[in-house]
Length: 285
Ligand SMILES: C[S@@+](CC[C@H](N)C(=O)[O-])C[C@H]1O[C@@H](n2cnc3c(N)ncnc32)[C@H](O)[C@@H]1O
Image 1: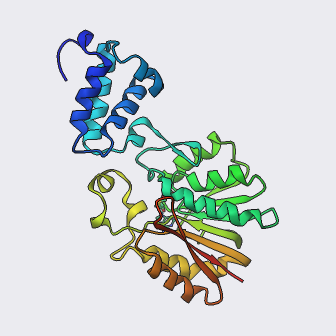
Image 2: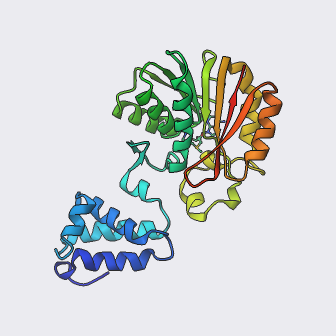
Image 3: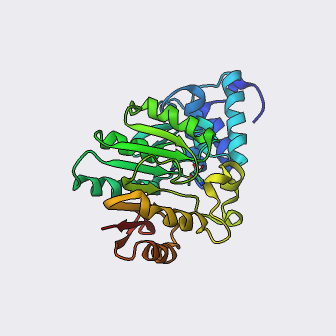
């Protein structure tokens, strides 16, 4: 997009952006509007009500830079520095996986289980990343204590911002280390959205921009589940539960691993809003 900035309207800029994003995004118009709103510091509604207004030179340059980064498949969430999850806004950047809507299924399952349990619960979120699961649980279960663990110190720095932003620093303890190793005590509920993809099968945009430590589940995608199931039985209190997000095709394999680790447990698979298998749940004795 070139020419005198004074003659370029917001509508012109959106047309250019949609064309530029056509091959890089499944939602070019939405991305363009969100990035335009971010550039101007406006709401999307305000952008849409003022489409005939002209750009300033500076805003036009900023918008163009964001659109070109999006055209290189950088997630919109990194470009605007935030992502909504479970009705809460999270700070995100390239140090953490962008929270996905399907992970809300895991939070739903955990909150339903917690409803029938006497407070105060002790919970661990393994591989907390941005802290989205731990913070959502802490906001909805104010009496619980939550250990949020990650191997990545960089990710924990982002999680810390989100814990503080949502005023749950008294109930969420961030711990650095490998899977369950940093846990100081057995817990009532273990939740995790572990890395579960085969890296070279991941969407190129995701692979290019999101942390490989958050994605890489080994050659069959199951490596981290195997290690979690090896450690989980001794980390759960009697009557505790384990809830793991899975990829849509992994239910059978993860349920088999769960049966080996918890032979007496009731095991369930829960679907996400799109009807795909998304969470494996073990209710231990
Ligand atoms: C799929 S991401 C999930 C992030 C966040 N919980 C969410 O749902 O958006 C997996 C997270 O596990 C962390 N991780 C990977 N291997 C780990 C390990 N061995 N121990 C602890 N955390 C690990 C990664 O750094 C990443 O933050």
